[in-house]
Length: 352
Ligand code: FES
Ligand SMILES: [Fe+2]
Image 1 (cartoon, rainbow, N blue to C red):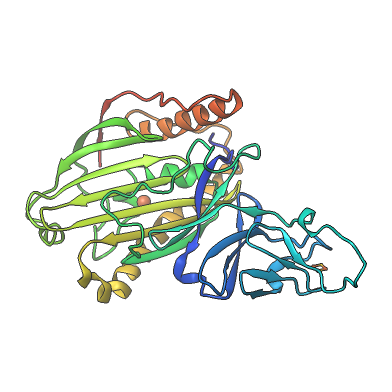
Image 2 (cartoon, rainbow, N blue to C red):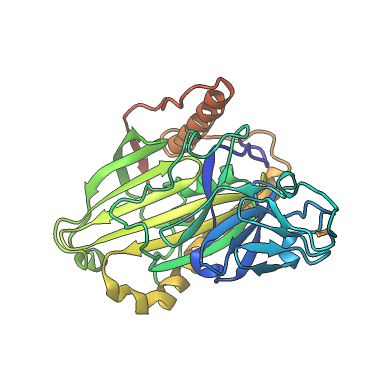
């Protein structure tokens, strides 16, 4: 679990790209879980995802062009539809029979929701509807078609496990997230105590009230409270709710390979006026996430030589939980049974 490479979970949906990154009639190439994926938006506006390798002679389809709801290969013009099946071979002459239906470049289930394009990585050839995690709909209070108020992403040169540990690590902030506008150095650490309980495919920090004197929280109305949940295959969802408005923060990790990870930081808000603040918000999000990225890159230098690493109570207990639910996911898949959350409610105490 603490090595340079991570086991990658299948039978799950991952974020491939923000919707806004793939315009009508264009495509975007991605590496996800080590596989070449081409996310395409047809001229009809619908998205689909192909395996980015031409079935004819293997050239990536990304060098081709989108035509209608298909992609034409740049080499000999073969065309592939949304289900990955070949729909045209221009060189064929009358009488030359070839069963196009049997020629496939391969496709991934693909859906668009919350202004994001999601791709499903099946386990053992199953369909997403049969899969253990069939649904991408897990953002509370956010309508399916609501676009993000702010979105950034950064490539982390580390495995999804180390990126996840950083995400759920309550004690690094005082040392890593320092700057003139936020916190100046790790001076006063305060004792913290938070209750946790198991939730869908993970766990959550039980909903608690936020200090009413905080200006940002005042904008959401009265009785502002927050709930933070973590779920497989790598999502952190913070749900901040007041009597007037809601803000949902989503941090999502998509493994590029077993040792590289794309980290998305996304905010949704039920109030419309946050949009003009976008550039400023994105700047601070990039600074903040960049600090997380810097430490994992530095950590990687040491991991090459580290023989033994530690997780301590209670500061690193959530990292242990991550390891536990991840191995339960893998065992459930091997044993072909339903995932059973092994976590129990627990209160954690630390200084941060
Ligand atoms: S390699 Fe794609 S059409 Fe020939
Ligand atoms: Fe962080």
